Amino acid sequence: MSKIPEHLIEKINSIPTQSGIYKMLDSNGRIIYVGKSISLKNRVRSYFADNPKWAKVEKMVSFIDDIEYIVTDTHLEAVLLECFLIKKIKPMFNSQLKNDEKYVYLKIEDFNIYNPLSIVNSREDNCYGPFRRKFSLIELINSFKNIYPITKADKGYDFEYNLMPIPMDRRIFEENKESLQEIFSDDKKMILLINRLEGKMKEAAAQLQFATASVYRDMIYGLNYLKTGIYGYKTMFLKDILLKMPITNGYKLFFVSKGEILLKSVFSTLTEDDIQDFINIGKDLKSSISSNLNEKSSMDYRDILYSEIKSLPDEMVIYL
Image 1 (cartoon, rainbow, N blue to C red):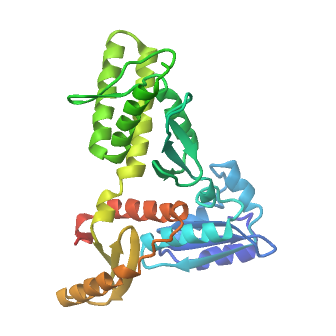
Image 2: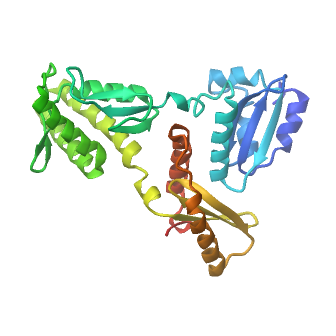
Image 3: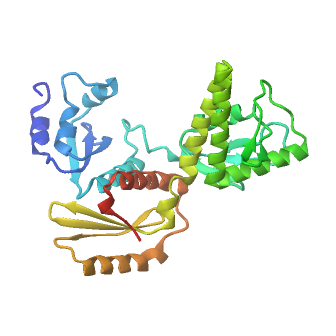
C-alpha cells in the first residue's frame, strides 16, 4: 500500500473487520462506489492491491480520495443497505441494481400474425415478471417460434421443432396461448414442459442432430430462468419467516412477511417468551404492508432477502 496517500492508509487501517457497507468518495466528496462485505477492512484493503484483477477497479482507485463506512449487525443488513444506497445515489462505478427502470415483463399476446410472446416495460394483462435480463427473454421468445404450436398432451405438452415457424390460425393460436398461460401460471406445468424439452434434447442428440439439441438446451436454460423469477419465491411469500441470527452482543431477530422485513430487534439474551412476543408484534404489523410498492425496485430487495435466507443454516430460519 506504499503508493496510496497517507490519509487513505490511515483511514483503511481504522476500518473495522465487521460486516457493513463502504463508500468510496472522490476529491469533490461525491460517492463514486458503494460496496458491502462481511469484513469491511479486508474488502476495502483489497482494492489497493498492487495488481488489481479488473481494469475498472484500477480506474476507480485513481479517483478515491476518501472512504466512509457503516457497520451493520449482520451481512443481510449490509446487502440490503448497499442496494438501497446504490438505488438512491447511483454511483458512477456501480453497474448493478441502479437501473431497475429497465427491467421488463414477458407478455402473452392476443391473436396476431407475429408472435404469441412479447416484452413490455410495464405490467399489463397476462404479464409475468419483472425480469432483469431482457436479452435472455428475447432469446427465449425467438427460440419458441420454432416449436409452436405447443399442445396439451396426457402427460404434459407436446410440440415439434420446425426450421421455419409455422403460421397459426386463430383456433391454433388460442390453443397455444392457453398452453402458455398454464405453463407460466403453474410451476408444475412449467416443469412438465421442461421435462419434455429435456426428452426432445436427448432424442436429438442420440440422432446426432446436435444443432437441434442445442436449441432445446437453450430453451431449457431460458425456462429455468423464468421459473426462478416467477416461482422461486413462493415459499417466502406464502409463509411468515422468523430469522434468528447470532451477533456479537446476543441475537438479532427479523420478522419477514411477503418478502419484506417488517420488524427487527436485538436481544442480549433470548427466551421463548421473547421470541413469541416478537412474532406477535410482527404479525400485528402485517396489515401495514403496502400494496403500492414499485415492483421493479422491490424485486432487488426480494432477491437479496431470498438469497440470504437460502444461505443461512436451518436453525436460523423458522417458517411460521
